[in-house]
Image (cartoon, rainbow, N blue to C red; front, side, top):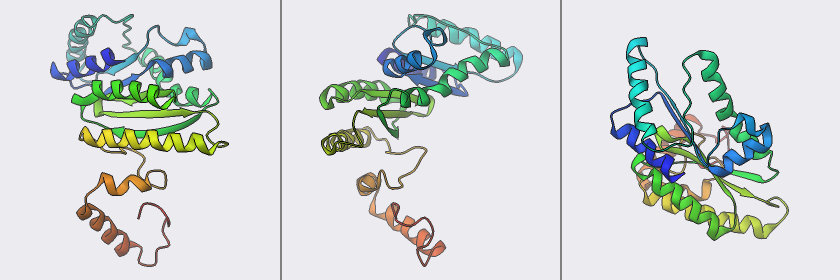
Length: 231
């Protein structure tokens, strides 16, 4: 996974601006293999999906240069799709990851954190270490081009065992603290809501929180819109 993350950094450092860059780790791939069958999932312990768009002549030239770069990173396999049907097969696998993780029977605590792309390798290495320290499997996949990686803590007996929930909260404390230390944010897509409410003060400045409160009060003076969330 760290090699795949380093490849993402090399792609952008070489001047490529893909329309999509998606990354997935070994636990995610194994879940997909058990869920949909190994024939649908490429070999390897990490999966990198890169999509390019543009004019037909230029995009094919760019794709060849990208193929050379990725080949130099010693992938287990390298597949190219140029038709809509072939591209859809790649995306079908990517879209299945979240459901495949749920199919493991473990509770999936999805954290949509974001870090600078320069910290991607450090993030995936941190997640591997956090998994060992916490005892929870951790599945990482997501939008590597944006630095938006879904770090999923996979917890057994989460809804039945208070001690498991306490351990998970400690693991999340460690994750969010490290993400902020990397210069990242604790949510890139899904917001604060209830699940991240207690980390909201650590993740923002008082000025930012005052602005949010002012907007909330202006639009919802009686507090009836989506009450009880982070504001």
